[in-house]
Image (cartoon, rainbow over all chains, first blue to last red; front, top):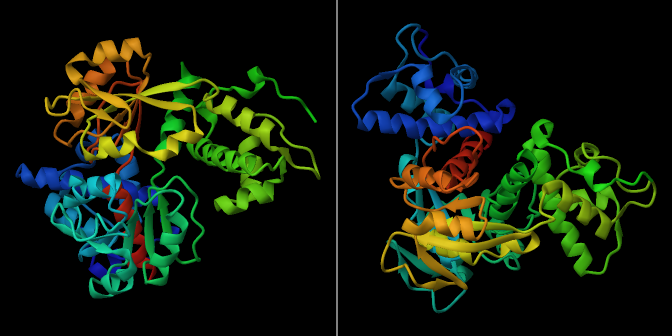
Length: 219
Length: 219
C-alpha cells in the first residue's frame, strides 16, 4: 500500500469536482459514525451504499488524492477519516460567523450538523438592539457595526448569511470588506461579490421548486 | 417566432440536468423582479449575467424546452415567466408540509423565498405537546400522529424535514407512508427511502465544509 503523505493529499481543488468534495464530506460523517461503533475497517461498498452513491464513485473520488485502502481488506476507518479531514482542510478548526440572529440564525446556532466537522460557529451578529447582547446556544450576539473587529479577533474566514433578502447584498459586501472569503447564503437573492469570494447558495425555495418540478413531471 | 404550446413545454425532466432546473428557477425569480419594475423585455445577457451564469448557458437551458425569444429583441418577460412556471410545474400551487416545528421549522414557516413560486407551506407538524396547537406565521402546528389525514386533506406531496438527526429517518419513512413523494431534508443524515421518492439534502454543514475546503486549498 502506497503511503500518502499530507503534502501529497492536500491538493488545489481547482480540477476537483465540487460534488467529489461534497461526497467526501458526507463520507467523513459516516466514518465518524463507524468510529463511534468501534468499527476499524470498512470496504468501499459498505461505506458508499448507505450514502446512496456507488463504490466505484467513491473510489474515483478518492483517486484524485492518491491511493487509499488495501485490496481485499478495505479502508482503515481512522486513517481514512484523517486523510479526508486533511483533503478537506478541516484538520484545523475553522471559525464561522452567523450574520443575522433571527429565527434562521438562531436555528443554525443550534444546528447539530457541525459536530462532525472542525467548524466552530463562534460569532453571531445583528443590527437589532433587541437581539444584541442576547446569548443564543452559547454564542453572544454582537452589533454588526463591529463586524470588522469580531472577524479579526476570531480569525473568521467564512460566514453564514441569514439576513432578509433586502439586506443580503449590503451585509455580504460589508462582510467581504471585513475579510470574509466564503459566504453560505440563505437569502433568496443572487449575491454579486468580488471574484475570489466563494459563495454557496442554500436556496430553500429554489431547491423545493426543483423537487416539485420532478414530481410534476415524473408522475 | 415558434409558438411553444404547453404540452410542448412540459417534458419529463429525466434527461434534463438538475442544474438546468435550478437555473430556470433562479431565472423565474429574476423575471418576477423585472415584472415588478415594469420591464417588458429582456435579453439573455441582461437576464443571465446578474445571476452569475452565462447567456450561452441560459439559452442552452431553455433550448431543452423549445425556442424562446426573438433574435435582436429578447424575451417577453411575462411570457418567459409563464413558460418557466409551466416547465417547472409551478403553474399550479403545490402544498408543502414542514415536519418539525423547532427553530428551523419556525424559520422556514416565515421564509420569504417561497413568495416567487407557487409553493404554499400550509401545514406544520410536531410531536411536542408544547408546540402542538401553536400558530407560527399563520400556520397551526398539528400533532404528527395525524400526519396521514393532514397530507390527504391538503393534497400535500412535498415535505420539508427539520426534525433532529436522530428522528429524521423515522419521520421521513412515516411521511412517505402517508403519501409524501418529495423530501427536502435539513437533518445532517443520509435518508434511506424507497425508490421513486425524491430527496434533496440541504446539508448546511456539508456545504459549509465544501466552502472551507475551497478556502483551505485556494489561498
